[in-house]
Image 1 (spheres, helix red, strand yellow):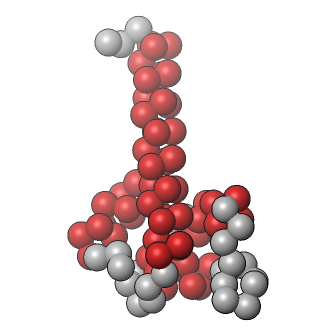
Image 2 (tube, helix red, strand yellow):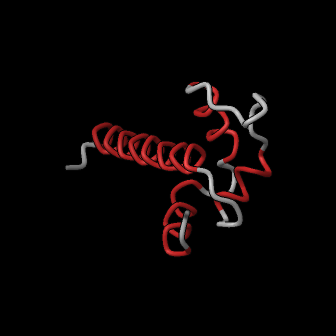
Image 3 (cartoon, one colour):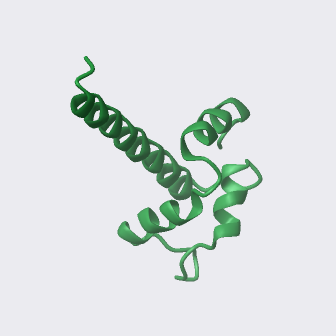
Length: 86
């Protein structure tokens, strides 16, 4: 379950439009609900906000967090390289 302090840090990095990224990761991993259908954005938001527990969705949220952090780091490094900042 995603706790309040975790949610705050996740929100800082992911912002408010994270569900599409989570859906993409779930699709990449072929994760579906019990009846074989893809999870919806409302279920992802419920897990993010601690209303529901789902380990697969929680793992996808964390994976999106890691990917986003890496992308931000690469962007900052590239900008610094272009600008000649150490």
